[in-house]
Length: 239
Ligand code: URA
Image 1 (cartoon, helix red, strand yellow):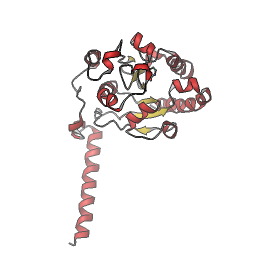
Image 2 (cartoon, helix red, strand yellow):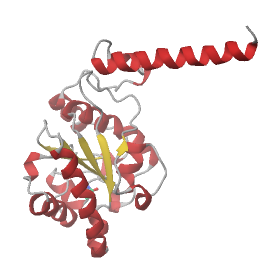
Image 3 (cartoon, rainbow, N blue to C red):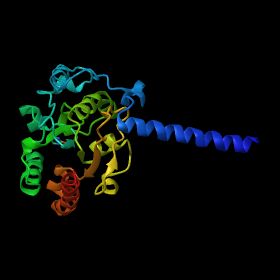
Image 4 (cartoon, rainbow, N blue to C red):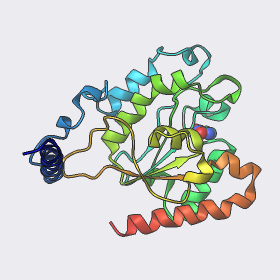
């Protein structure tokens, strides 16, 4: 056999083994850990209470020096729908709960008046668990240090859909530098490296949309957010 044919056959063989393994993985006949074992969450053995306790004592980045509270997350720990924002603001830092300030009230309105759900039915968290001083943007190393907490939250809650609120959440969940304006309005594959998904479960799909704080400054964008949210409702209704 000449080299070209051998190469072609080799590539076909690798592709068919890969396809077979993917199918076995989806059917639950092999363990999901086989996919990327080296990137497993450092909190793989933690349940949510243990994770919250660990985050509550976290001193891994300088934000612990200025925080009043660690804002871990709130809501239904079996939710199909998760909202992920950027980082706590002053109100959240004071109260220890995500999205309770002005932007949070708007998010609650979207969930309750728009989606006809209760805030307590969904799960709400942020990329960063501690407030950046003066509400500055999160630094890349803060996101890298803190994101394993969010990754494990997603693994434990196993939502069907995650609404990424704003560019920081979208960038982290989609592992991209593309801006929110281009990303929003379409479902994307979750690109959190090493996210462990149970064999019988599908990884969450991500719907990026504008952050509620942006909507407070640009009320006209509420229409686009509502379009995005309607797609999420349709997706959830389809089971
Ligand atoms: N903005 C966020 O991104 N998260 C909060 O919890 C509050 C405001």
